[in-house]
Image 1 (tube, rainbow, N blue to C red):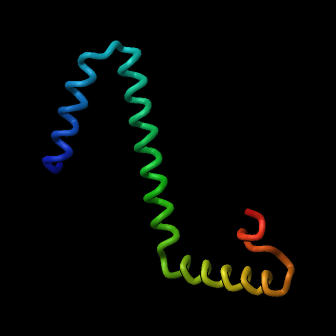
Image 2 (cartoon, rainbow, N blue to C red; image 1 turned 90 degrees about the vertical axis):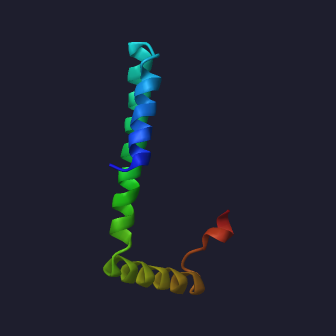
Length: 80
């Protein structure tokens, strides 16, 4: 555990000592939600950063560009 993490944990402990049980539960729920969001972002980044994913996204982008040029669909700029 890094020193920054240790300091953060100590800070959380000190903060929650002065909260009611309900406030502490709400605070921990909010922290858990943020952790879950960070985990999802990390998982998503791992998925889309693979060479296979990058190749697929490039192919998809090229197909969309072709459809826009052919008038089969519109780019986001046209509808925003």
